[in-house]
Amino acid sequence: MEKASPPRVWVMTAEYEPLIIGGLGTVATELTKALNALHVNMNIVTASQTRRIQINHRNITLLRIPKTSPYYKNKSYKSKHVRRLIARYLQHRPDLIHVHSLEFAKAALALKRKYWIPVCYTCHSLASMESKKRSHGVKLQELLLRGADRIIVPSHWLKQQIRRRYAKVSSKINVIPNGVTTISTGSKAPAYKLLFVGRIIRDKGIEALIGALPYLSRKNRRVQLTIVGKGSHKYQKRLKSIAKKRGVASRIRWMGPLPHSKVQRLYSSYGAVVVPSKRESFCLVALEAMANRVPLVSSRAGGLREFVNKNNAQIIRNVNSRTIGRAIYKMWKHPKKIRRRVANAKLVASRYHWRNIAIRYKRLFVSVSGRRGKNH
Image (cartoon, rainbow, N blue to C red):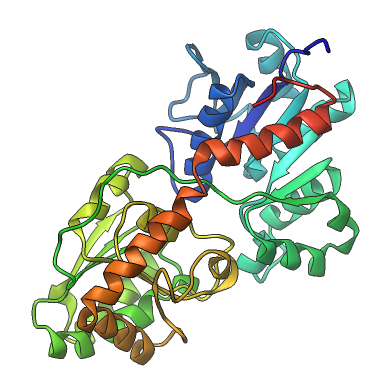
């Protein structure tokens, strides 16, 4: 049988290394590299960190567009200007457009209408769940959910949330989890050194985690918590005020947002990663802790339930200060059980290697674009 060339894909994402803010940027970067290793021809259209257009033609072509006039307005790239830049800098029309970021919703759908290019949208979270108002982001996401040929989500939980709110798009949803890369070979840090990584927002359970520190400090006076992530100044000020009132401000180290590569190297310096989330579409941090052989103390909210269980993590049954504190203390009391869980967690995480995830994406892209590609 004659082999067809693999599909040519344009990836549209506002976050791509080194400009990574959260899980979306990590997924967009690592997935693109893994697909490229599977001989999928990848071109990236992403945000520029400067006020100038930048083009890089190395292993993967990157077109970086500034978030400034005339290209960007109201948290959205302008379709006409994106199309002109793509025509100028990217030589070959793609078989498929893969969108990660809502900023490119209008541009991707305009290209679809003009050139009949299918669009796949990886939905990392629902904007309507994060905002009570019908914000611009909600409108862009609704536009993309309706217009995309396929919607990829990282968990069955997120699939169900979309089906409840947007029933008409149900038949287009595919579940493909996020992947993970192992950096460290484990942690030898003391168990009292705790790490939280994530956005500094209410749904992450940080207030309850801070509230658990007075109890934990009575059990171990050396307990420390490092918080890595970005949030509003107002909310961080509130959290620091709570820590001061509880008498634990000196036990908390606020590191702010860090590049993903630095976060990866941090894991081995901590005795446990704590994920006290009230809601998660997937939670890449939990999977990274498991892959890097660091003990995990976690809730099973949302998509976490699909890979976190009592055999690979110490479970937080309810997100409040009392249960978080007791879960962490149980981890301290049972080191042998934790070692077994760490080993089990590593086995679970091995199934999420980025190559395995990229193979699933490639099959979907080949199906949607009508290209056969190479067998693996």
